[in-house]
Image (cartoon, rainbow, N blue to C red; front, side, top):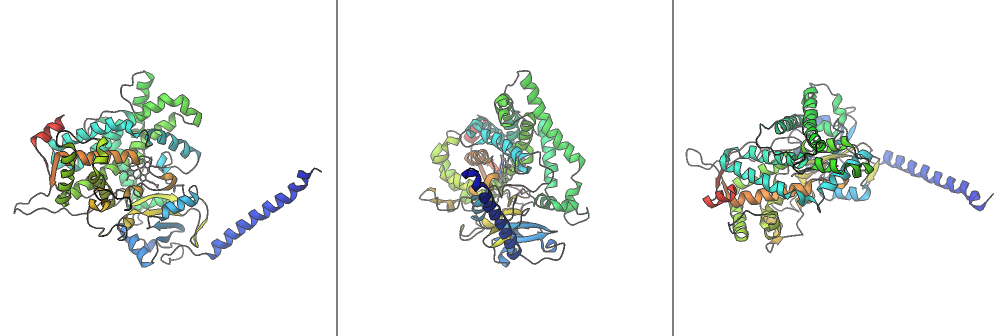
Length: 508
Ligand code: HEM
């Protein structure tokens, strides 16, 4: 027997003992260790009756304060939920073991990147998405962004009362242009309306009950009469609408590609062109079809961007003083001679701070995308079982007095020091897009759209409160819809071009 053969047996025995001990220790720890703090539940239903009403994030914040914890634990019908309300926690978990926290609870949207379980297919999709949206290449969409923002300004000058719809059209039409190269001129466009219908179905599926099923798929099995089980109506028609919305533009680009008739650049056209190279990584046509659909549909990205823009209008309407400061900066830098550009970002710190403050003050996604824990974990002496859904309570984080003094006040100045962005203030851009391996891969793109839309709108329009018949200003309520993506409830705003010169800039 060789020396190495002599050692194989003992070495294997030592490894096996180690593995058994580690498993036993973990099992033992899980038996002895408590879950993170939270209300005590009832047998079987757990904390279903403790679960807060809408707005859920506010209720969860209060509950976390009551239990003096920033990792609140709830048990819903045997499924575990942990809600984080400290901005350092999620990155901390991701740093310890990013893979363990990278899965998603499954609810039937696994065809699309955002809903996929963690694994090889997700990695292939994510890699392709990253290739076209990473920070080094995202500037390739600047022309499309400028064009869409200009169309938006034009629509705003024509029908300022419809500013909320224009914000939605800007986000939705831009995504169709980026994903498929489609030049959408109006809401009645066949591609836009198909996608928009499907987005509405998705939004309906994301109302509170449905939102919860996203997090805890076990709720799929509750009867339709159960409070919040309205998502059950999200049935066959909605699925057909989504299928149609994903197929229609993909097929259009594919046909053009096969006929060698691609006239406009797009994500799908570039992927089809690069397919021979991409296929080495396991990409096929279905991957591309699904990613095209992801950009517009599954991510609800258009609706997140439009939520941001609508909150921007709400903040500007409520706070004329910040609009004046922003316009002063814009006038100093572009002098009213031209429209601001993305290349002006370094010279426009107040506009950058404005964007950060809108994200903080009215986060489009108050409870950030659920992550599913893939293996048992012990965190700060508390047991987090495999399968737990983790939610990041961004709403709570953005109202944390120690990070943001006087948090309810809209004040872009909080992000500035000596006229520049203050690196010591926590940046909402680092929290609002999620965390770990599932962090929003469209964030660089979304921030460019947000910046340009805010800068160009403030450069060319005055925004103020409407006046009622008695001459009093109408102060809009700061109220939002409840869902996975939240929008301000419809409100009125008085939006007027700043001058005839501004109008001529918009006309180009
Ligand atoms: C203001 C606009 C936006 C906000 C606030 C936002 C926020 C988010 C959040 C919170 C997540 C979940 C992250 C997590 O699970 O930790 C997410 C995921 C995602 N977002 Fe965004 N997003 C925005 C715009 C966009 C845009 C424009 C795109 C596409 C161009 C996009 C593509 C995606 C994708 C593909 C995912 C899923 C990533 C994955 O599961 O691996 N988002 N986004």
